[in-house]
Amino acid sequence: MATKKYDDLLFEDLQDAEEAAAYLTACYEESEEVFLQGLRKVAEAHGGVAALAKAANLNRESLYRMLSDKGNPRLSSLSAILEKIGLRLEFAPARDKRAA
Image (tube, rainbow, N blue to C red; front, side, top):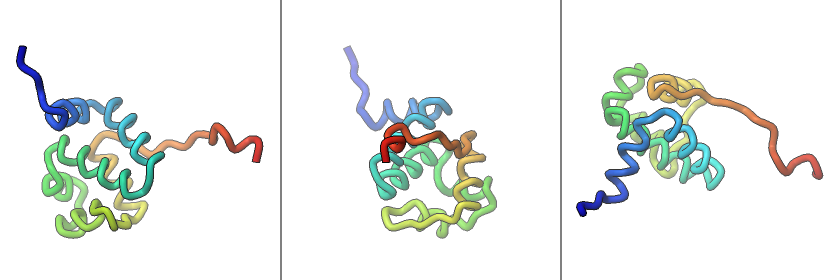
């Protein structure tokens, strides 16, 4: 029985909006750096960073920098990226903040 590599399976999964949303949520909950790495993987699964930059009217080099471990995307750039991937930002109440 042939097996697939983890990266190949992840690439396929991230092409689905529901899977990409869950993946990015988990990445965001981990750390900012992990979120940016995850967003880069989702971008790659949706045609690549260069194609995404063109579709979102962003500079390709700037987008690569934004999605680096030390990146710091503007909210407008992040929204444009997510829109082209087929996702949106969503807010929910913190689960454990009631006791604070």
